[in-house]
Image (cartoon, rainbow over all chains, first blue to last red; front, side):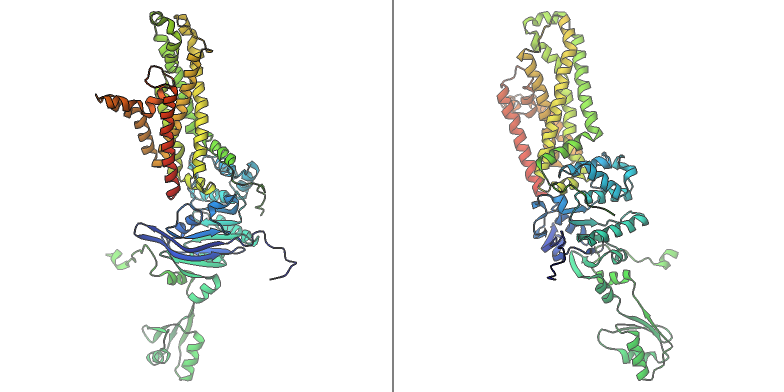
Length: 323
Length: 264
C-alpha cells in the first residue's frame, strides 16, 4: 500500500466484474441477477451443484452466451472488445469444444493462429500439459482426461492474464488433479486472476482462496474459503447425561437446536463443547460424554446449498431394497 | 514450471483469422477427400464423355468444336458441385456438432470475421481445385477429341473463360452451402437444404408448366451459376453473376445476423 519499492504486478486490475448478470432460457432463470468481482492474485472458486448456473455464467464472461440482462466485464471491457481476447482470458469451458477429426497439435495451431501465436508456443503448452505423446493424434480418440489437458493447453495458449476453468479436474487422474491444483496456485501466485468452478467442496477447499457459492442461479456465499468453512462447521456436539432432559431445558436458547436420542444422548447444534460443559458444571449436572463433531466440508457445502439443488436424488431406502 | 513466453505482440488480426481458418480447412480429412473426389469425378466424366463421342458428331458440330469441347470438359461439374456443397456445409456444421464453434468464437468473439474468414479460405481453395478440375481434364481429353475432328485452342476465350467460370461456380457453391450451414447449424439439415436448393429446386420448378415458373427458374442459384460455364441460357454472364451474388449476399447477411444473436 503506497510502498513505491514494490513493483506493480503486470496483472494488477485484471478483474472480472459482473453486475446484475442474468440469463433466462424461456421462463427458466439460469442466472438470476448476480453481482461479483473476481480479483487478481488469488484463486477464486466457483462452487455449486450441477445446474446452478456456473457454466452459463462462465460462458457469459466469454460472450458465448448473451446475458438477458446485466453485464460482465474483464479488465474493464467486455471480452469481445479486447484487442487480443486469448491473451486477456484463457478459458476451458468444455473439454469437447474441439473438432474430433483434427489432431491436438493442429487444433492448438489453428487457435493460436488467430492471434499470431506460433508453433513454438503451441509446442510449449503441449509440453506443459503433458500432451507430447498424443499431440499428433486426432482428438476423437482422446480420453476425457486427455481432452481436459488439451482444453487447458488451449486456455494457456495466449499466456492469459485471466484463466477461467470450468470443472478442470473432471476426468483427470489423481496426478492430473494435483497438477491442475498446483498450476492454478502457481498462476495466481504470478498475480493472475484464476476463476475455476467445481461442484466438489473438497476440491475447492484445497485450491481456492476465495469462494463464490452459487445455487439456483443466485449467489449464496461470496467470502474467503476459511470464513465459509468456519461458518459452516460451527459446533455440533454430542453428549450423554443421566439428566439429559434437564440439561436440554437448560441449554435451550435461540439458534440452539437440540435433538434427543436414546439413553440420555443429546445432539446440540449451535453451542461449543466448552459452553455446554460449563453450563452443565454450574448446574451440577453430570456428563458421561461430551464430543464435538466437526461437520465435514461436504456437509458444510450441503448445508449452504440445501434447497438450492436443481436435481434431487431420492434417498436409497435399504429396507425397500431388501424387499 | 514456466508458462510465459507467448509472443509479446500477438493480437487478434484479420490475417490471423484467415490463417487459422486455412489451418482448420487443410487439417481435416474430409476436406482432402472431398477435393480429391472433385478432381477424380471431373477427369472420369470428361474421359467417359470424350470416348463415347463419335467422329460423326464432331463433323455435325463442325465449326463449333470449341463449344463442344467445353461441354465435355465441364460435364463433371453437375456431380462435383454436390461434393463441394457437402463440404461447404460441413466446414461450419462440423464445428457445431463437435463443439469446436465455442473455441472458434472464444478466439474470435465478434464471430462474423470468423465466418468471413471461413468463406474466403473455402472460396479460394475451391476455386483453385475447380481450376484443376476443369483445365486438367481439358488437357487430357483434347487429344482424343482432336482425333475425332473437334479442334480447340486453350487460348480461345470461348474455351478458357467457361473453364474458369466452372471453377468459379464451384467456389460459389461451396460458400452458398457454408452460409446455409451457418444458418442451420446442423450437418444433416445443412447438407439436405443445400443439395435441395442446388439439385431439387431447379427440377421442381422446371416441371411446373407455367411461364412464371420458367422465369423463376432462371433466378435460381444453380441455374444462374451454370451460366458461368455453359452457354445458351437466357441471361449473360454479368446477369448471372448478379443473381448468384444476390443469393450469397442475402444468405451471408442472414447468417451474420443469426451468428451474432444466438448463443454459441
